[in-house]
Length: 279
Image (cartoon, rainbow, N blue to C red; front, top):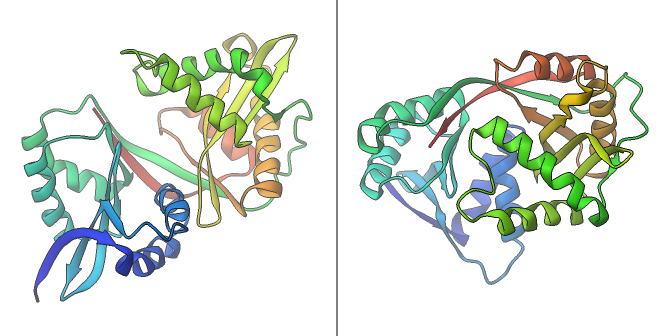
């Protein structure tokens, strides 16, 4: 058996989409990156997606962007992928995906790329495809462009505490503000605002393969412990399932016991496990 690795093009996209859609919750992020691009008749090259071929058949793939994401990788393909990544040097801010695939990639890459800033080895992936049995908070709504200035500080606080680096550091304030504005304009942002203060917020990070991935869930520290999070998540889930996708999903750090309790109380169940290597 022979193998080779090469960037994918239009000839391979049907097979790649089959692989991605076979596990839609696991591959939601990748599907979101592919779905819009495949609609362009001008796009015939996917230089940021490496394919691993056995005897000419696409078996595995690797998304290589700001995030490196393995797609249906095998032990053999991961060895081959890490050889390419080691030669190229690190260009990403994270490696994220199924726990066994990510940690196996990192074991081989670490001697070449150096120590990671943080490794999150156990991130439950949770999902639900029906409305919560919890009565949703009717004060949670879609964000509007008029909310940007009050929502933005909450997004910055959540991101900084979650990732460990401010999203507006190193001159990125305008870029990040524009990103949040785009999320709001896309109706992928949800908020509860009481008397001009953000009490709760959440966003949709990715939509693909019939799945919407919820991210950025945040309760204002002043209002924590008051039973806000579960009805608020029930409201977000209702909006997602009614308007955006047939399945709502998210992944969460295992050490975030409060978040895990919120999602379980809302009705989310664990369906997979991710890991993330942060740089």
